[in-house]
Image 1 (cartoon, rainbow, N blue to C red):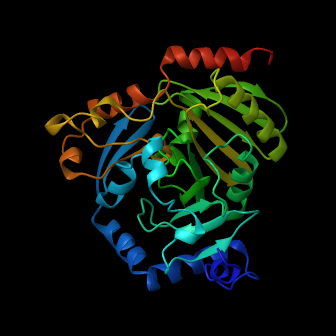
Image 2: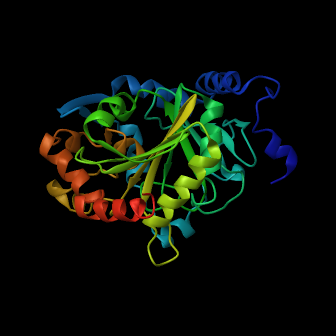
Length: 330
Protein backbone atom coordinates (compact mmCIF):
# COMPACT_ATOMS: atom_id res chain seq x y z
CA UNK A 1 0.00 0.00 0.00
CA UNK A 2 1.40 3.42 -0.93
CA UNK A 3 2.22 5.71 2.00
CA UNK A 4 -0.10 8.39 0.60
CA UNK A 5 -3.00 5.95 0.47
CA UNK A 6 -2.20 4.58 3.94
CA UNK A 7 -2.06 8.03 5.51
CA UNK A 8 -5.53 8.83 4.19
CA UNK A 9 -6.82 6.40 6.81
CA UNK A 10 -5.94 8.68 9.70
CA UNK A 11 -7.71 11.64 11.19
CA UNK A 12 -5.50 14.65 11.81
CA UNK A 13 -5.69 14.65 15.58
CA UNK A 14 -2.25 13.48 16.69
CA UNK A 15 -1.81 16.32 19.20
CA UNK A 16 -5.00 15.47 21.10
CA UNK A 17 -5.10 13.06 24.05
CA UNK A 18 -6.20 9.56 23.13
CA UNK A 19 -9.66 9.79 24.70
CA UNK A 20 -10.45 12.87 22.63
CA UNK A 21 -9.11 11.24 19.46
CA UNK A 22 -11.34 8.22 20.11
CA UNK A 23 -14.43 10.39 20.55
CA UNK A 24 -13.61 12.45 17.45
CA UNK A 25 -13.14 9.30 15.39
CA UNK A 26 -16.44 7.83 16.51
CA UNK A 27 -18.40 11.03 15.87
CA UNK A 28 -16.79 11.51 12.46
CA UNK A 29 -17.49 7.93 11.37
CA UNK A 30 -21.15 7.73 12.37
CA UNK A 31 -21.72 11.08 10.70
CA UNK A 32 -19.83 10.50 7.44
CA UNK A 33 -19.72 6.73 6.90
CA UNK A 34 -23.17 5.38 5.92
CA UNK A 35 -22.33 1.80 6.93
CA UNK A 36 -21.42 2.92 10.45
CA UNK A 37 -24.42 5.27 10.61
CA UNK A 38 -26.76 2.39 9.83
CA UNK A 39 -24.98 -0.01 12.16
CA UNK A 40 -25.30 2.21 15.22
CA UNK A 41 -28.84 3.24 14.36
CA UNK A 42 -29.79 -0.44 14.34
CA UNK A 43 -28.81 -0.81 17.99
CA UNK A 44 -32.05 0.94 18.94
CA UNK A 45 -33.98 -2.14 17.79
CA UNK A 46 -31.87 -4.74 19.64
CA UNK A 47 -34.09 -6.92 21.85
CA UNK A 48 -32.92 -8.16 25.25
CA UNK A 49 -33.85 -11.01 27.59
CA UNK A 50 -32.30 -11.02 31.05
CA UNK A 51 -31.80 -14.09 33.24
CA UNK A 52 -30.85 -13.92 36.91
CA UNK A 53 -28.56 -16.49 38.48
CA UNK A 54 -26.94 -16.60 41.91
CA UNK A 55 -24.87 -13.40 42.27
CA UNK A 56 -24.76 -12.71 38.53
CA UNK A 57 -26.95 -12.20 35.49
CA UNK A 58 -26.81 -13.21 31.83
CA UNK A 59 -28.44 -11.39 28.92
CA UNK A 60 -29.45 -12.63 25.49
CA UNK A 61 -29.46 -10.01 22.72
CA UNK A 62 -31.19 -10.29 19.36
CA UNK A 63 -28.79 -8.31 17.16
CA UNK A 64 -29.23 -9.11 13.44
CA UNK A 65 -26.33 -6.82 12.53
CA UNK A 66 -23.94 -9.45 13.91
CA UNK A 67 -24.95 -12.18 11.46
CA UNK A 68 -21.73 -11.86 9.40
CA UNK A 69 -19.47 -12.28 12.42
CA UNK A 70 -21.49 -15.02 14.11
CA UNK A 71 -21.72 -17.13 10.96
CA UNK A 72 -18.20 -16.43 9.66
CA UNK A 73 -16.41 -19.36 8.08
CA UNK A 74 -13.05 -19.58 9.81
CA UNK A 75 -11.67 -22.80 8.36
CA UNK A 76 -8.30 -22.55 6.60
CA UNK A 77 -9.76 -22.92 3.10
CA UNK A 78 -12.32 -20.12 3.58
CA UNK A 79 -9.71 -17.81 5.13
CA UNK A 80 -7.32 -18.32 2.20
CA UNK A 81 -10.05 -17.65 -0.36
CA UNK A 82 -11.18 -14.24 0.98
CA UNK A 83 -9.49 -10.86 1.26
CA UNK A 84 -8.53 -9.93 4.80
CA UNK A 85 -11.01 -7.26 5.87
CA UNK A 86 -8.64 -5.89 8.54
CA UNK A 87 -5.68 -5.16 6.28
CA UNK A 88 -5.45 -1.40 5.61
CA UNK A 89 -5.44 -1.87 1.83
CA UNK A 90 -8.80 -3.67 2.02
CA UNK A 91 -10.64 -1.30 4.37
CA UNK A 92 -13.66 0.62 2.99
CA UNK A 93 -12.82 4.00 1.49
CA UNK A 94 -14.91 5.79 4.13
CA UNK A 95 -13.24 4.09 7.07
CA UNK A 96 -10.80 6.15 9.14
CA UNK A 97 -8.40 5.30 11.96
CA UNK A 98 -6.26 6.65 14.75
CA UNK A 99 -2.84 5.34 15.68
CA UNK A 100 -2.44 3.80 19.13
CA UNK A 101 0.90 2.13 19.85
CA UNK A 102 3.31 0.35 17.56
CA UNK A 103 1.44 -1.00 14.56
CA UNK A 104 -1.96 -0.92 16.28
CA UNK A 105 -4.80 1.11 14.78
CA UNK A 106 -8.20 1.90 16.22
CA UNK A 107 -11.21 1.59 13.90
CA UNK A 108 -14.93 2.08 14.45
CA UNK A 109 -16.65 -1.29 14.11
CA UNK A 110 -19.60 -0.75 11.71
CA UNK A 111 -21.39 -3.89 12.95
CA UNK A 112 -21.62 -3.00 16.64
CA UNK A 113 -22.60 -4.80 19.79
CA UNK A 114 -21.75 -1.85 22.06
CA UNK A 115 -22.97 1.74 21.78
CA UNK A 116 -19.33 2.50 20.96
CA UNK A 117 -17.56 -0.50 19.50
CA UNK A 118 -14.00 -0.44 18.15
CA UNK A 119 -11.72 -2.92 16.40
CA UNK A 120 -8.00 -2.64 17.15
CA UNK A 121 -5.93 -4.43 14.46
CA UNK A 122 -2.26 -4.22 13.63
CA UNK A 123 -1.44 -2.64 10.30
CA UNK A 124 0.54 -5.77 9.44
CA UNK A 125 -1.10 -9.01 8.36
CA UNK A 126 0.01 -11.37 11.12
CA UNK A 127 -1.87 -14.26 12.76
CA UNK A 128 -4.19 -13.85 15.74
CA UNK A 129 -1.92 -14.90 18.63
CA UNK A 130 -1.86 -13.39 22.10
CA UNK A 131 1.26 -14.89 23.70
CA UNK A 132 3.61 -12.00 22.89
CA UNK A 133 0.92 -9.30 22.74
CA UNK A 134 -0.54 -9.26 26.24
CA UNK A 135 1.46 -6.16 27.22
CA UNK A 136 -0.11 -4.33 24.28
CA UNK A 137 -3.58 -5.37 25.48
CA UNK A 138 -2.82 -3.92 28.91
CA UNK A 139 -1.25 -0.74 27.52
CA UNK A 140 -4.14 -0.10 25.15
CA UNK A 141 -6.60 -0.71 27.98
CA UNK A 142 -4.89 1.95 30.10
CA UNK A 143 -4.81 4.33 27.11
CA UNK A 144 -8.56 3.99 26.56
CA UNK A 145 -9.21 4.25 30.29
CA UNK A 146 -12.04 3.27 32.60
CA UNK A 147 -14.80 3.91 30.06
CA UNK A 148 -13.84 0.91 27.91
CA UNK A 149 -13.24 -2.81 28.16
CA UNK A 150 -10.66 -4.27 25.79
CA UNK A 151 -11.15 -7.87 24.75
CA UNK A 152 -9.49 -10.60 22.73
CA UNK A 153 -10.99 -13.58 20.92
CA UNK A 154 -8.67 -16.47 20.22
CA UNK A 155 -8.35 -17.68 16.61
CA UNK A 156 -10.67 -20.60 17.43
CA UNK A 157 -12.80 -18.81 20.02
CA UNK A 158 -14.86 -16.26 18.14
CA UNK A 159 -12.35 -14.29 16.07
CA UNK A 160 -13.88 -13.77 12.63
CA UNK A 161 -10.42 -12.81 11.32
CA UNK A 162 -8.11 -15.45 12.83
CA UNK A 163 -5.46 -14.59 10.26
CA UNK A 164 -5.06 -10.96 11.39
CA UNK A 165 -4.02 -9.92 14.90
CA UNK A 166 -6.61 -7.69 16.53
CA UNK A 167 -8.40 -6.81 19.75
CA UNK A 168 -11.72 -5.04 20.28
CA UNK A 169 -13.05 -2.46 22.74
CA UNK A 170 -16.49 -1.43 23.91
CA UNK A 171 -18.21 0.54 26.64
CA UNK A 172 -17.36 -0.58 30.17
CA UNK A 173 -20.51 -1.70 31.97
CA UNK A 174 -22.17 -3.18 28.90
CA UNK A 175 -20.99 -6.69 29.71
CA UNK A 176 -22.64 -8.03 32.84
CA UNK A 177 -19.33 -9.28 34.22
CA UNK A 178 -18.21 -5.64 34.61
CA UNK A 179 -20.86 -5.02 37.25
CA UNK A 180 -21.12 -8.56 38.65
CA UNK A 181 -17.41 -9.00 39.31
CA UNK A 182 -17.37 -7.57 42.86
CA UNK A 183 -20.21 -9.82 44.03
CA UNK A 184 -18.72 -12.85 42.27
CA UNK A 185 -15.36 -12.18 43.95
CA UNK A 186 -17.01 -12.68 47.34
CA UNK A 187 -19.18 -15.64 46.42
CA UNK A 188 -17.39 -17.53 43.65
CA UNK A 189 -13.78 -16.32 43.69
CA UNK A 190 -10.85 -18.01 45.39
CA UNK A 191 -7.56 -16.15 45.70
CA UNK A 192 -4.68 -18.51 44.86
CA UNK A 193 -1.82 -16.03 44.83
CA UNK A 194 -1.38 -12.55 46.27
CA UNK A 195 1.49 -10.10 46.73
CA UNK A 196 1.64 -6.37 47.37
CA UNK A 197 0.91 -5.63 43.71
CA UNK A 198 -0.76 -8.75 42.28
CA UNK A 199 -3.76 -10.94 42.99
CA UNK A 200 -4.77 -14.04 41.03
CA UNK A 201 -8.18 -15.61 41.65
CA UNK A 202 -10.07 -18.59 40.29
CA UNK A 203 -13.82 -18.24 39.67
CA UNK A 204 -16.06 -21.30 39.50
CA UNK A 205 -19.74 -22.27 39.64
CA UNK A 206 -20.86 -19.20 37.67
CA UNK A 207 -21.50 -20.98 34.33
CA UNK A 208 -18.04 -19.92 33.17
CA UNK A 209 -14.95 -21.08 35.04
CA UNK A 210 -12.34 -18.34 34.64
CA UNK A 211 -9.17 -16.77 36.04
CA UNK A 212 -8.85 -13.13 37.15
CA UNK A 213 -5.54 -11.30 37.53
CA UNK A 214 -5.51 -7.84 39.14
CA UNK A 215 -2.47 -5.59 39.42
CA UNK A 216 -1.16 -2.04 39.14
CA UNK A 217 2.16 -3.41 37.88
CA UNK A 218 2.16 -4.16 34.17
CA UNK A 219 5.25 -6.39 34.36
CA UNK A 220 3.72 -8.46 37.15
CA UNK A 221 0.50 -9.07 35.26
CA UNK A 222 2.40 -9.89 32.04
CA UNK A 223 4.46 -12.49 33.91
CA UNK A 224 1.38 -13.95 35.58
CA UNK A 225 -0.42 -14.25 32.26
CA UNK A 226 2.58 -16.12 30.84
CA UNK A 227 2.16 -18.70 33.62
CA UNK A 228 -1.57 -19.03 32.90
CA UNK A 229 -0.87 -19.38 29.18
CA UNK A 230 1.70 -22.08 29.88
CA UNK A 231 -0.70 -23.92 32.18
CA UNK A 232 -3.33 -23.86 29.42
CA UNK A 233 -1.01 -24.80 26.57
CA UNK A 234 -1.62 -28.01 24.73
CA UNK A 235 1.23 -30.21 23.59
CA UNK A 236 1.02 -28.88 20.04
CA UNK A 237 2.06 -25.41 18.89
CA UNK A 238 -1.44 -23.94 18.54
CA UNK A 239 -2.69 -21.28 20.91
CA UNK A 240 -4.78 -22.65 23.79
CA UNK A 241 -8.45 -21.79 23.43
CA UNK A 242 -9.31 -18.63 25.37
CA UNK A 243 -11.07 -15.29 25.49
CA UNK A 244 -9.76 -12.29 27.42
CA UNK A 245 -11.44 -9.20 28.87
CA UNK A 246 -9.23 -6.40 30.21
CA UNK A 247 -10.24 -3.25 32.09
CA UNK A 248 -8.25 -0.47 33.72
CA UNK A 249 -9.10 1.93 36.51
CA UNK A 250 -5.90 2.61 38.46
CA UNK A 251 -5.30 -1.15 38.34
CA UNK A 252 -5.65 -3.64 35.52
CA UNK A 253 -8.13 -6.49 35.72
CA UNK A 254 -7.50 -9.26 33.23
CA UNK A 255 -10.10 -12.03 32.94
CA UNK A 256 -9.03 -15.24 31.21
CA UNK A 257 -11.81 -17.55 30.04
CA UNK A 258 -10.44 -20.98 29.05
CA UNK A 259 -12.48 -22.64 26.32
CA UNK A 260 -13.12 -26.28 25.50
CA UNK A 261 -14.36 -25.59 21.97
CA UNK A 262 -15.43 -22.82 19.59
CA UNK A 263 -19.12 -23.43 18.93
CA UNK A 264 -21.85 -25.54 20.57
CA UNK A 265 -23.28 -28.53 18.74
CA UNK A 266 -26.55 -26.85 17.76
CA UNK A 267 -24.63 -24.31 15.67
CA UNK A 268 -24.03 -27.16 13.21
CA UNK A 269 -27.55 -28.60 13.21
CA UNK A 270 -29.94 -28.22 10.28
CA UNK A 271 -33.49 -26.89 10.13
CA UNK A 272 -35.33 -26.09 13.35
CA UNK A 273 -32.65 -27.70 15.49
CA UNK A 274 -30.05 -25.16 14.39
CA UNK A 275 -29.29 -22.26 16.73
CA UNK A 276 -26.77 -19.80 15.36
CA UNK A 277 -24.63 -18.68 18.26
CA UNK A 278 -20.84 -18.43 18.18
CA UNK A 279 -19.66 -17.52 21.70
CA UNK A 280 -16.77 -15.09 22.03
CA UNK A 281 -15.49 -12.70 24.71
CA UNK A 282 -18.70 -10.65 24.92
CA UNK A 283 -20.69 -13.83 25.49
CA UNK A 284 -18.20 -14.89 28.18
CA UNK A 285 -18.79 -11.44 29.66
CA UNK A 286 -22.46 -12.26 30.11
CA UNK A 287 -24.10 -11.00 26.90
CA UNK A 288 -25.01 -13.76 24.45
CA UNK A 289 -25.50 -12.53 20.90
CA UNK A 290 -28.20 -14.10 18.71
CA UNK A 291 -28.32 -12.65 15.17
CA UNK A 292 -31.42 -14.62 14.09
CA UNK A 293 -34.85 -13.86 15.52
CA UNK A 294 -35.96 -17.49 15.41
CA UNK A 295 -33.03 -18.44 17.64
CA UNK A 296 -33.62 -15.56 20.06
CA UNK A 297 -37.21 -16.77 20.46
CA UNK A 298 -35.87 -20.14 21.69
CA UNK A 299 -33.63 -18.68 24.40
CA UNK A 300 -34.32 -20.05 27.86
CA UNK A 301 -32.36 -20.31 31.05
CA UNK A 302 -31.69 -23.96 30.21
CA UNK A 303 -30.33 -23.09 26.76
CA UNK A 304 -27.93 -20.54 28.24
CA UNK A 305 -26.63 -23.10 30.73
CA UNK A 306 -26.11 -25.58 27.89
CA UNK A 307 -24.22 -23.09 25.72
CA UNK A 308 -21.70 -22.43 28.47
CA UNK A 309 -21.52 -26.12 29.45
CA UNK A 310 -20.48 -27.05 25.94
CA UNK A 311 -17.90 -24.36 25.19
CA UNK A 312 -16.20 -23.57 28.52
CA UNK A 313 -14.00 -25.60 30.85
CA UNK A 314 -15.79 -28.24 32.87
CA UNK A 315 -15.22 -28.33 36.64
CA UNK A 316 -12.81 -31.24 36.14
CA UNK A 317 -10.80 -29.40 33.47
CA UNK A 318 -10.75 -26.26 35.60
CA UNK A 319 -9.54 -28.15 38.66
CA UNK A 320 -6.65 -29.53 36.61
CA UNK A 321 -5.80 -25.98 35.56
CA UNK A 322 -6.05 -24.84 39.18
CA UNK A 323 -3.66 -27.60 40.25
CA UNK A 324 -1.13 -26.54 37.62
CA UNK A 325 -1.42 -22.87 38.61
CA UNK A 326 -1.17 -23.45 42.34
CA UNK A 327 1.75 -25.89 42.10
CA UNK A 328 4.80 -24.04 43.34
CA UNK A 329 2.86 -21.00 44.57
CA UNK A 330 2.76 -22.19 48.15
